[in-house]
Structures are given as C-alpha cells and as structure tokens.
Length: 196
Ligand code: GRF
Image 1 (cartoon, helix red, strand yellow):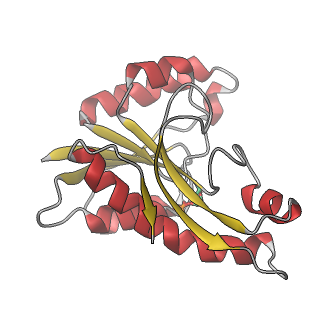
Image 2 (cartoon, protein in one colour; image 1 turned 180 degrees about the horizontal axis):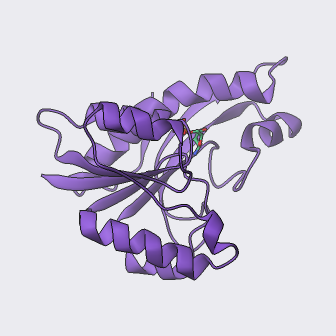
C-alpha cells in the first residue's frame, strides 16, 4: 500500500474525492491531511473519515517561505508519504520543497494547462473568448503550474457563463480526474489521460 498525504487550504472537496477513492484494490491509502489554514473546512471532513490531520499555519512565518516549508517537512517526514497531493492548496512551494519531494508531488489546477497558470483561471478563459475550459492534474516542479501534465478534463464555455458557473461545472470533473490520475500514478503509469 502506498501512503498518500493530501495538502489543503480550504473546503477540501478534492481531498474528499481522493480519500473516498482509496478503497479496496486501490494501491493507495491516505496517511495525512495537512492544512496551512487552521480551521480549514477540509480538516473536519478528514477527521470524520478517521484520517490523521495536521495544521502548519503559514502566517507566523510571514515571508519566510523556507521556515514555513521546514515546518511543513517536519510533519510530512513523520507521515512518510509516497505521494503528496496538493488539493486546493494555495501556497506557492519553493524549489527546495519540490526538489526534496521530486517526482512525488501532484497538483490539480482549474485550467487546461499550459493555459492560465496562476489564479482566476475561469474568468481569464471566459474573457479570452475560449470555447473550452477545464482542469489539469500535473506533477509539481519548481515552475508554478508548469510540471508534466498527467490528466485533463474539459467543458464547453457557454455564452452567458460567469466564472462561478464555469467553476461549478469544472469542479465535479476535478473530483473524477484527480482520483483517476492518482491511481495510475501510484501504479507507475504516468501516461496522460483525458476525460471523458
Ligand atoms: C478547486 O477549484 C481546485 O481546482 C483548486 O482549488 C479549488 C478548491 O478546491 N486547486 P477544494 O474544494 O478545496 O478541493
């Protein structure tokens, strides 16, 4: 069984879908849900599922990213994860972190990468007049939202779409894509997939 740590900052809907997928024959099991935000809604959901949780609040570290990541690593090393899934985790990780955990960190990003790295992805796709939007799961490297893409799912942008309406159609796809990619990744299959 592979050990999967999940990092969150908020409600953790992607964390829930990952956790709920890791049953039966699935090669992974959640070993830790860690949030940089004390009181993040996802922490309660993880506790309700009997999963170990931790909080490493980034605020006390201010701009000291290395200090925050050292505290993060202390908790992560104890959990001994084989894979770390960023799931709505809203902190940028330094090259030191991505090098330490090289090849073990995945992230889900709400755009069809390489388009729209960073924030406000759905609003940017709408503003650009794109026909399609969606989400991507990628390996985390030093380049923000820039690592190898492991999976994508797409939806059509509708004429009257708002960013919220579009996000509401993409999120359920994230909940399907991330578990599908994680299972394959844990089996050593890094070939990119596209849903549906
Ligand atoms: C999702 O849109 C995800 O793509 C992004 O954070 C948002 C919230 O995720 N990374 P969650 O509900 O906290 O998993």
